[in-house]
Length: 114
Image (tube, rainbow, N blue to C red; front, top):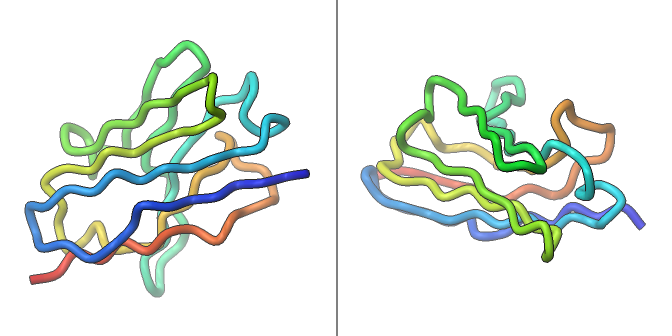
């Protein structure tokens, strides 16, 4: 069964932090590059960060230095630790493989507002 279950979103003030989690089924997670994506209202979904099975990472310029992606291969889980959040980080956050496959989970809402 294909599963992507994102959690950990919420509402924070600018400068705050959140940690997102994504539990993926083994057939998606194992052996694949995993990524976090986000979609803000009225905008296209965009790639935020990726991590390989050997923990090499990539970050979009907009989040570099503020977000950290990591994965626990034993738990089929990928995380996104977000610091120094800005209002422009407000979006629904999704995890998927990178490049993405056609199945998407529900996502988790992150709202940054004063």
